[in-house]
Image (cartoon, rainbow, N blue to C red):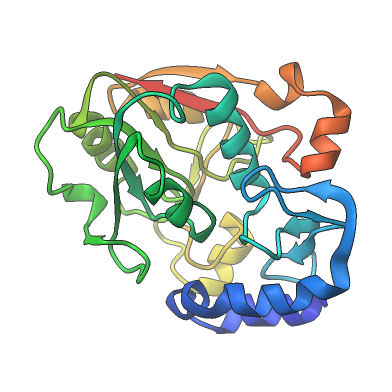
Length: 256
């Protein structure tokens, strides 16, 4: 199963996967019936989640067959429910590179004025380059932008644009892959070959790998950043296992 999923992720273009991947995952779900793990995004329960990853070292127990949430999405759902006003306040929300598991659910929430945007995703309503967000300053209460900054040419400009369109007092979640063995962001513009980028930056379409300084990088965009060790400090081991969460991921809560 791991090998099949790895091949699919590596060789089928992402836009096509976004359109049809959920049907294939639901077919596979019949082999995972059980009650050992639970998805806090869609409330589905299984004996375990599907494996996920582009190479042979793909992660076990990662992908929810029902809604396609990964570990980071389940963490975001829990974090926003328990530590923010996302589910209770009337909010105007910009969701950049929207994830399939969230789109329908957020669109149905009556408290949200919810806008999805991306430069290529067929799931997004607004076609947008994050370097030039086509909205006036002080437009949104919340911005969600996960696993984007490792792809863009100028991540400081992209962060600054998100900060610009937030209202004063607004907040954003801007997560990215990190390697904590690096003190600072690892970036080398001379590495252009996709195979080399995968070796150095984890994925062939990544331009960098953020290190322990990621919070300080976000501050360069204008944000006040709280590095929240929500999983490590506030969740029980039983919850981390039940929801299959990234045990050491820091949530970067960004405020304007």
